[in-house]
Image (cartoon, rainbow, N blue to C red; front, side, top):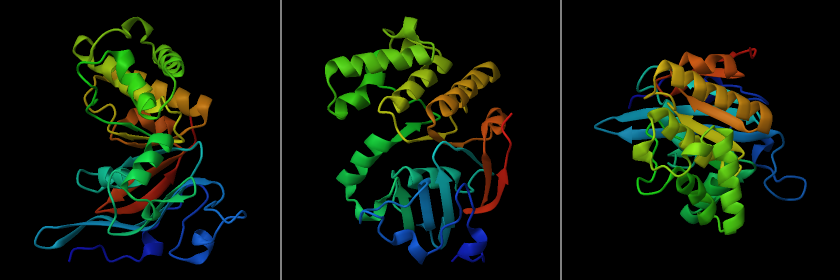
Length: 267
């Protein structure tokens, strides 16, 4: 069994409000008997994810995080260190083998798949390296799609899509399909789509990985502006130095654990 020989306290990275232990009052009910935990928007408690390939390989190893609302967190590390796996766990796209994720007071372990999907739809926006746009829909149609699944009115959906396309500078490209857009334009559509339901947390996995340097800088500027102006929490996995100046914290991952948490002053 391959697992780094560190305790959870040693591995846990303190981000924002602090590192959460396995017990204590983290799981105590809030003041109204609900799952209110205070300031951190997102917590993990002794989070583990392993893959079984002849031996047990830990992709995420006893990770403890407490990320406050409005923070910009950059996760970096070598290929295979567990960055994308951790992001998938934070977003509820994958389940851990042990440990807990708590988003805005809701524990993932208490939710079935439908409940977890509903929480993702309400609270999380995803931006991926590969844009994952629907080919036959226009830019506007792609941005509108998550709101339609959320049951919003046609008027509200259209107005919100237009607002976000203007925000990312694509008003004049709203009627174009993905094949008619550049890579940078497609990524800006994907960002607008991620924000359409006003998520509390935006998770981005190598969002500039397929873009040229000028376009990468533009995406970084959009992320930074949105973080400052909306107060949304951004958690970005990237090797791109564009994001260094935006981050409140840089988490360095090695072999599934947080090697260090580097606190940054924003430029």
